[in-house]
Image 1 (tube, rainbow, N blue to C red):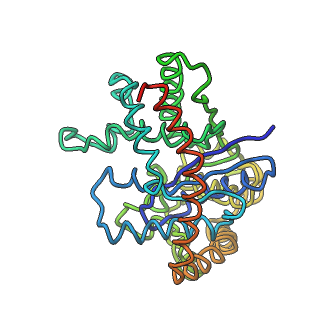
Image 2 (cartoon, rainbow, N blue to C red):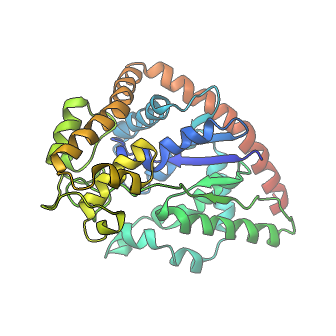
Length: 333
């Protein structure tokens, strides 16, 4: 059965291994299933929920598009575009904001985490951006959305908003209620310096992450310095329960090799970390180095990247403008 898939990545720059294994690698697999229709969005409207340097944002939009393409997303097969070029996203977000309930947004745990202790100083955009995310998905009649653990709650909200809109305007099935696509055999990628913290571009230490622009020497150096513990590698996966760094590195290796964690554990059972780190570095280099070279090559051709985004935005606009027109008619505009 064919699926219509929508997903987006924020143009925050410096995309890393966590972004690749957690999202982009899966996008490529979904695209390569012939019956799927895929739309991948550089969600630049979401990016400005926190203050951005305009020049840096422009650069990051191109870099995200370059990363999509370098990782294997084909603009001839999938739509690649940036959100701000399709005005229907902003229009639909406002209409859906007037349908959504404050109580629903108050339950969003990610806002609490991102806003921190001083919620009064956070932007309204940061608070209401799950409604924009719902608009992104619902405009394209997406049937499925790839989500990680941190986005499940937002997709539930999207489903609630779609159902409420349909009920409020007596339009059954007008907004399609999307299903989550949760990756199997995926280990959440944690910091190389702390196995209980998520790998993040905001970490001040570059040694905490593998960037998708890193070269072979940088990858080997970072894995060599990655935090471990004094014990040899375990004999069974259940023995990783209280060893977050070992679990993270074995999880990364498993994801790269497309194999169960149990297989990776048995492969290195009883061995020391130096031997395992060598193999992990080789596996990382094999995947990341070609991506890194291609990103750098594409970034030298801004005109090509801008053309891809423009053409993708035209295709997206044709779909989204039809849907927003129908939404406006239902609302009474």
